[in-house]
Every structure is written in C-alpha cells, then in structure tokens.
Length: 79
Image: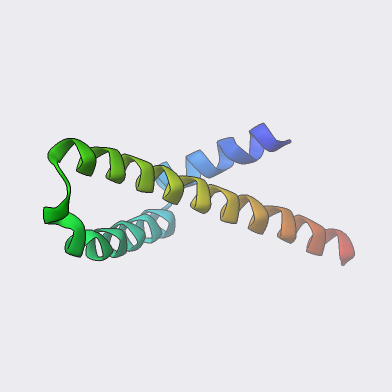
C-alpha cells in the first residue's frame, strides 16, 4: 500500500497543477530563507546545503500528502 501511495504522490507532483504550485511556493520560500547565508558558504558547501534542504522538503511534502491520503481514507470508512 505504501508503494502505491508514493507512486500516487510522484504522479501528483509531476502532473497536478496545485501540487506544482505548492512546490513553487515552497521553493520560493526556501530560496528567500537562504538569502542571508548565500555569501557565507563556499560553492561546494552551498550545493551540499541546498541538496540537503531540498531533500528534506521533498520528504516533508511526501509524508504530508501520504498522511492526508490516509486520513481521507479513514474518514471515508467512517461514513
């Protein structure tokens, strides 16, 4: 079941306009938050930090969507 949910999440991120808009908002906010640190990193450190943070964002988005799907399924079962 979990693999199916992850597949649904990946599909949503690729094709759903609301999901794309969410990603854009998160990416813009992340970029805005990183502005004060831009000159404090070497290019290599910056690349590592960005990769790390974007990985965290991806995991957070995925887990939030999966939780939402599971919650909706539970609510439907209660009806």
